[in-house]
Image 1 (tube, rainbow, N blue to C red):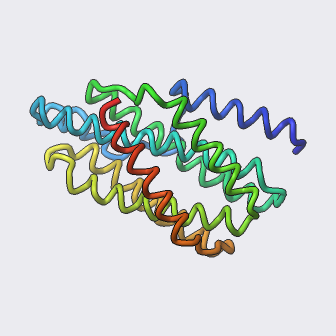
Image 2: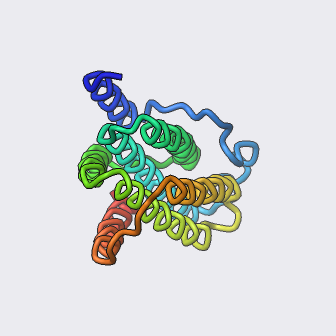
Length: 211
């Protein structure tokens, strides 16, 4: 594929992600329980579940941007297919969280274009340091996301079975993405980089919880 074609695909991915025009390739976990789960929540629980799912949706916006940028940066066709495959599963996550936000009567973050642009820039930067570093970035990102999702499982209302099913499946997928990246040749990132990534993620999750 020519560079221009890859750039156009990246632009298309950005537009679809920010516009919310994504369709999942797999059924939404907990779909059969969605209506009952929503009805069982108090107004306060619904607001909490909506805020947590908005944060998760932002994480998937960033995942789309990261994988698109890393696929664009690599010259290895096999690695590009690796990134594209992972991105398709992240598209499922993006569509699932959007669906659940709709069920809860809540909305995505108003700052999604900003989140996407920032994550895309980070993904390009990681890619410029070489494929093994780029894969290392995937490993660290996915491990942090897995921990973040585990925390959300602790905070989501027990009655919100639908949201919990989505988060559980996302958590399993993210753990597998980290393992796949390790097997593909990832190198461990230096601890200052890992700390900086955690700090950036903290800012994103705190802001997205409200905006």
